[in-house]
Length: 149
Image (cartoon, rainbow, N blue to C red; front, side):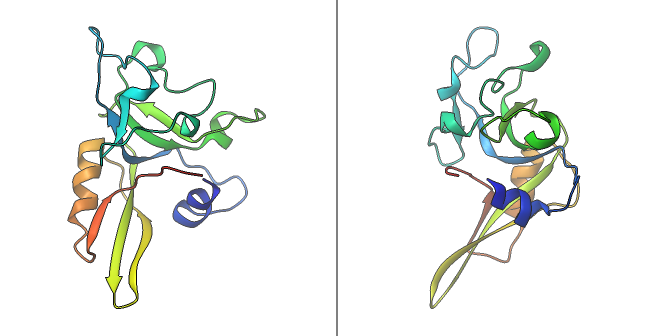
């Protein structure tokens, strides 16, 4: 996931970023609106979010009892300073404001190539999905789905 941190978001010593929306959300709730388990989060294409992508030992957690049904790419280096934690994904309230990380697929005679771009403005998760879809210069544009390291 360092590629996303350095090539999509930017690099630099002490660079701060909160989190970027990615294309995953909760799909299966218990009676109080919480995920039944980590397998209840899916990418927009319907595949499950790999357990190893969550910030290990901390996420997903519905922090402070808040219903956190959407997923962002979290700056774990900032939030968990001094702790060697694995994973990058965090569950957040869908109404929280974060920038969007979009995947853009371009196609030409050589084939398809994917690029990732970030929005300039923070927005809620549904707005992030719509923002990425609104980028009209590609074959396919969507909120990023990060499935492997």
